[in-house]
Length: 428
Image (cartoon, rainbow, N blue to C red):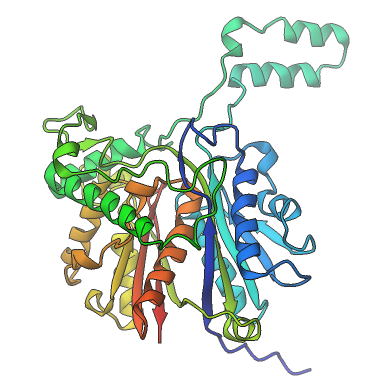
């Protein structure tokens, strides 16, 4: 028997996207689960692209960062609760804030290899409904009681419970190896790279102003699905200016002189979900759907942020894209100057600016700010961790399509754990 020949890689089209408006935590979506939000986004995508029929979508790939135990099979349960064919396979992925983009990459690989013709990728996260854990001491007592061989031994174990054991473990946005929150890590990186308060506020104001302008011109009309009374991202502040942002007090980096990071130039805790439709060229043509762009390259990287932030170096928690992007561009034979648009996820304004500085230090050309996050980004939309990657892919694909003719866009997403996920979209 002759061995199978490896398949020829096919182009992967980005056909469209749909997301719910992002909401501040403990707001309109306070009682919405990851599955409810993800289902709403998926249903919006299904309706807009006529995906209701049997076999319309080959598979659904999605994830969440903050998960309850009930979310162990989130993607599949979302399919079963949606208008998508219930026979659609689905599975979860998770790579912190890179989850949404990693889901896109996972789906794209199967399309490229001919294993499926179409797929939906996405993610959801709720900071409002974060899982509360059982106090570890209480957990140990309950396990001891479960293992007890007699009623008396069980009562003896349960008698060890004290009122303090009933206090739940609340998830904290902190890195296990350092105990520092993402904001505290970003503050260390900002100092290491000399990022100024004024530069951060300028970037934050531009993000809000550009997102507001995009909404006003109807850009998001076919990308955002109203949900629970919201039609626009709740965090959007159309009137944001550098002057208004300058009046805010710093909230991170307070343990060192001259803190620069405020609530205004940092993303808030956010609830939301996003999806994106990917397909082969043949599938899209057969259904009369015009591809917005093509996913042509992707790269991941990781840094030893303990040796960076804790030791005072430049490889901070959110700086892995400083390595992923140059590596991806070298492999593709491209430079920054070859991109019409650049999308950098704005976890913090300081992180975006440090990433830009790092790219230049590694020999890449400066990014033209007129091409950066032209429809706003996470500082304005908010950042439901696993949803951001899908949001960025759908937004950039449509921006490229709007330009008409050939074009190229770069995506850079930083993630907890010192990771980065990056990609290239193109129109030819």
